[in-house]
Amino acid sequence: NAGVTQTPKFRVLKTGQSMTLLCAQDMNHEYMYWYRQDPGMGLRLIHYSVGEGTTAKGEVPDGYNVSRLKKQNFLLGLESAAPSQTSVYFCASSSPRAGYLENTEAFFGQGTRLTVV
Amino acid sequence: SQKIEQNSEALNIQEGKTATLTCNYTNYSPAYLQWYRQDPGRGPVFLLLIRENEKEKRKERLKVTFDTTLKQSLFHITASQPADSATYLCALDPPRWAGYSTLTFGKGTMLLVSP
Image (cartoon, rainbow over all chains, first blue to last red; front, side, top):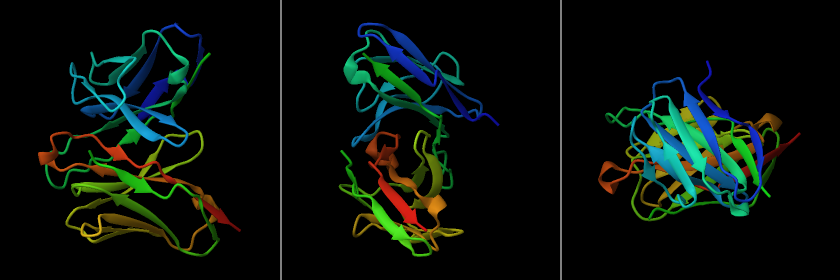
């Protein structure tokens, strides 16, 4: 039972380089999210998607782009990495709230530790 | 926007005691309030969910209360064990009329249970 899988787990980038973080979920969830977690800042939402082909900005979207071409995959891109983007990135997925009894718990991946030097 | 406050100082307790963690929020009451556990180097893991019209929820040694008047949720771990040591996050799921559907997380409180 894979759940939510993130690749890669670790990455070191030089300032100005680009990269894509991949998130895959096998639970047929409609919603997917990208968060970053920094010491003392908690989890902050970067972008999210409420279904295949849709994306929306979260709390801290600047410097990032996302795509949801397939329901099971949510990609996070850094076009020109900056040291301020050094962080741990978490992908999560959940079911939408279809009714009062719908459980909206989020399932998280194991995280990607990104260092930009 | 919704703000969540969790005690930033670590909570240190002795094994066997009850740990109580606090989550306070501002503005409107959420439709749901969730609690997660996060171990170092791992992603958060869902523990419990409580709805706005529920006062209390239990699961094994865990108990969550929700007071919409105080705008507060308390998370209790009874008979705590060293294995309960982790960071605990609360998250708010907004009501439908809020116009958005994403969880807002608190910064978490670290719990340390000593033998």
